[in-house]
View 1 (spheres, helix red, strand yellow):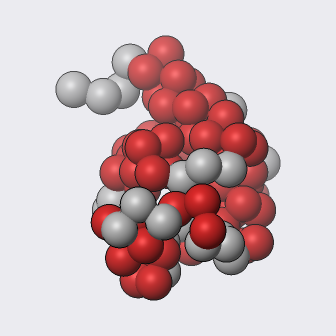
View 2 (view 1 turned 180 degrees about the vertical axis):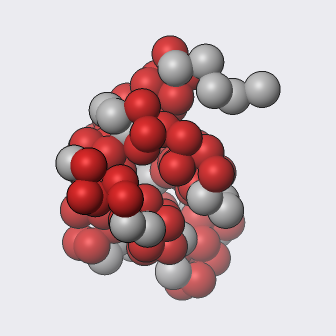
Length: 101
């Protein structure tokens, strides 16, 4: 885990979490259930969940541009249970670490 946190792993993972434009547009039209998410989003959110279990990972996620924004966006718009669960877990860990002002 230390090697992963020494490199820009969190920043790379956060960049993968940005929803593609066709999914954002579908979310606006309330067609979320009919749009299939790219599988890499599910794997990237799993990796971010693992990284934030380390206090250094929490710091990096908060400092990453749009990091927490993308995680909250998943809870609000995505219907995949695993992604929602991992996003909620990330949010809970961040709040537990008391890093959000």
